[in-house]
Amino acid sequence: MLLIYSPISSPRLEYICATLFNQEVTITTDKWAYINYPSAKLNYSNEKFSEQDLTITPSGLLFQQNMQDQQILCFDWNGLTSFFKTDSGTIPFDLLSAAFYLISRYEEWQPFTPDQYGRYAHTNSAAYKNNFLHLPLVDLWLLAFESKVQHYFPNYQLPQKVFSFIPTYDVDIAYCYLHQPFFKNLFGFYRDLLTGKLESFLERGNVYSGYHKDPYDQFDFLDEINSRYNLPAIYFFLLADKRKGVDKNIHPSKKALQALIIKTVGKYATGIHPSWQSGEEDSLLEKEINTLSDLTKKPVTSSRQHYLKMTIPETYPLLLKAGIKQDYTLGYGTSNGFRASYANPFFWYDFHHEQVTNLKIHPFCYMDANSIFELRLPVYEAKNELQAMWDQIKKVKGEMICIFHNHFLTDQPDWVEWKKMYIDFLKENFRH
Image 1: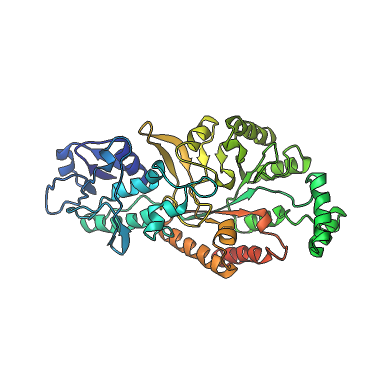
Image 2: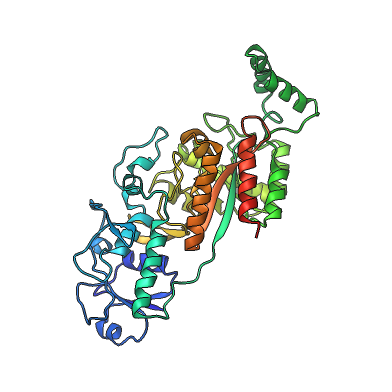
């Protein structure tokens, strides 16, 4: 158990210590208890009690009230980008405040310029501006911190974690042709014919005549690879009642979609994929959750926003009110990387009330749509990016969450190489 001395405590200090050290930490304001403690300890104050004192000098963030402008000036420490530099201390920056700043998404509570969808743009972030968006920087700081502590207390180890890979599948459109509105398919036939898209015209006809499987129906394939590699997959279903804008799902009243959900929930974890419309009309979120709950006969406690439509702090209180306990939205819809610079789940900290909530946030680092549409990467570069994230997260024993879509893992000419990339990535990393 690590003992941390601070002359005063605060909800922010208690939160970040519990997050980073997995509750295996005690904070004391009693300097004599600290001085006499025989095991691993950290002095988080401006005082120094001995030459063998392991110290971090506070920058002040963890003892402030409300939101204040924070100056992010970066420097190198142990080969890692760091900020909140201090003039004293064994560790030359306020690691606890820096981690708190990144994990709490402090910067997202400040005014910002949104992206085209009204979301927090990755280009606003300190991680992007200082070139560490591709790193689980907080986890890397912790590894370096562990080495520092072991210099003073050789038996100290960070709380033990185990690397995990969790593929998640967003089912925005379960079927390409089948179970779609009649007029949509009729229009599609004529459009493909008139624009010379013979391959699509024939594909649509073969699916409707029963000769071919619907190309988006990749659920048996996903089940096979999940089973082969024993993957703890999670499926998020978009169940908007009204087709509008980017909400283009099969209507939840369709028997085929209902059967798919019932089959999936029998084997995998499932969650709601709140529609874009639900972000504009609060009552729709509860309706969509109830639709999924009625089908699965289980409480719905996990979610990921469709199109990653979320803003902090507005979205999270709505999810809590609706009974959501685990959210998987945190990541960018315009770039891959680590939005919180952390590759582990954590609880959301509410600055309005200066307290931790019971909403657990599971950040993701990779989404296929980012590689395809935003970064426009060749398939081999996307695979290299995915592999680099695997290697980084495995190094820090984190939780690697990726987003894939069934309609980008098809055997259609435009997507077959992306499907193959995913197969090869799993084969190479699970071969031992």
